[in-house]
Length: 259
Image (tube, rainbow, N blue to C red; front, top):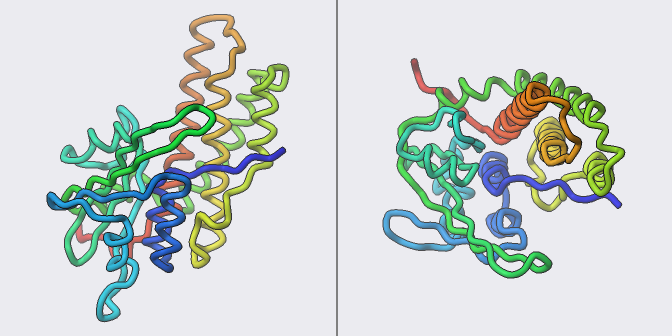
């Protein structure tokens, strides 16, 4: 049976802020099965609905915010400045905004509760003022076309890596890979206004990241430390391409700052 692909909360949030849509639907998509999200901003705690409403429906017909999702990891902060990089790397994700109120980073703090069979999550978004992030982040991510080409190459490399690992021999890993290959994004998670190419890129990137995670966890023994290092390096590069593609698909910038 096919499984559903998942997207980082920051990617879903950025997609709705960039493409636009109903606030209630956006909050429902971002929260998913989580407990109601809160937002920590300027020393106050408010609901995600309260925070998103003026961004999704700006007063006076003003344009929506510039927005991007970034998925930093240690050693790869994806253009983030020091004021927020540590928090974002710890979370593995962040949503960046630029609106009439300036530039901000939203980093989700996730607290898990419950059991393995019935897990739950409390999520609080920490809002931090940042410098104009557009040029640095876009320089790291590249254009959507560049990110898509790198992603397609990464998908081919991921398939080759699985062949080399021969994961089909291993259960349940092989079965999990088959489910991921047939998986699709939940249609309710993304705004209807999001373009087809962006949706396709998000789906492919989510699939690549899921396959890479399975390949990285595969128990096939390596004949040498050198081969193991090569495998780990290859998988990291493939995951990097997928993270860049997820960011490119959820980046909406009307005009870049002057150099």
